[in-house]
Length: 267
Image 1: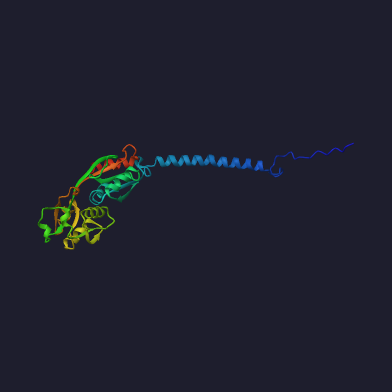
Image 2: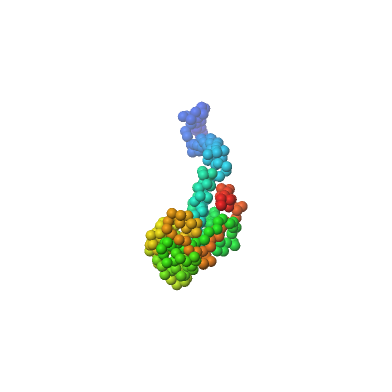
């Protein structure tokens, strides 16, 4: 007769210290603990988002973020500082990344979506973009009062290339533009000094270091305190119809859209 095995005695108490932990038991416990953590974490995240969205300091008027602006030299130095200053004062949570570029470069970069908006000369083709008028200015020649060209009321760019020039840094958009125009004529610019601002250019011109080309607004302003004479340039490119260009006003973020409207009204 076969022996009968004695029944295995199992503890009746469900206490964890009596039952030996198993993999499935451990996974169940961990799942419940992490589930509770996820639940409370979700509530905390929802509370944070609601607080951020309703905070006037963090999102004043729904505006917060960065706007990338590309500008040619003329607009950047003569018109944008005051316009951007008033906009940033009204929107303290918006920052602006401002970069100087040639007008034709700006048109291409805006079309590619690299920046939100650009300020370009009206002489470039912007047919693929939405445009709005911004400002009107022109480039003029500035010379010292005792310079031979000071007696001229106007002069073409080609006739002044025999003189020494004072200009901006070679990396500036305007200096590259003028160098290209001179190269097309077949006579390189004779740059004696390169500086960082139009005011500094005018100061060197006053000292007879060379002649310079600056916006007419700059020439009029500094001629009140410096002994320089502005001479009109007869070239068509000297007239600068400055234009705001964007891909689509509707597609811009709210803060960038408001900057466009601000620039249009800030004249």
